[in-house]
Image (cartoon, rainbow, N blue to C red; front, side):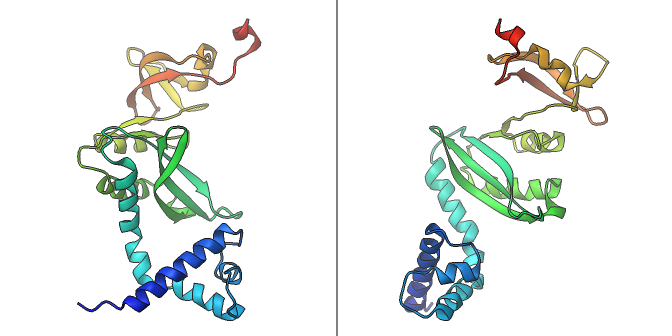
Length: 231
């Protein structure tokens, strides 16, 4: 097999130049990255350089291998790492979104894997399934992480986590309905807010949801306390 070392080195140099340009505060567009490259080349040539880099299909094919290597280096031999997963907006029109998995490490979040999706694929079960399948393939075979998510992730998500034989910590709030396992009446979860304090307290086994019931353990906790609770 013949490898063009000159072309490979040129590709790496272009990648490093684009990274340095972004770190220096340029906009993350082809034109913005190109204009901010720090060398004596003409502006049109710098923009064309970034355009060729972003159009290189071989780079896109290798992105998941890069993520897999990052996971290998960051997770290492951890048996039960804590991994946060959340969504972020990518544009003001809210048409494109980023889903990202980060490793909790001594007060920092270290990026493991991420994907970009349009609005019509955001928070869809199929999107979640493909994302988690790829993440699982990157983790060691004996790794069973604790997946931590915010309130936007709902019952189908928790079921997918359990299907992978992983553990989860999720946040539920406001109009999500729940009932104790031994009871019949459902009520909005916000009715439990009066039981909260700055110390986490387990409430035992509950069923979440009205139409689709999901059994889980509820733990209540609040960053804020009312004046009566502080007294």
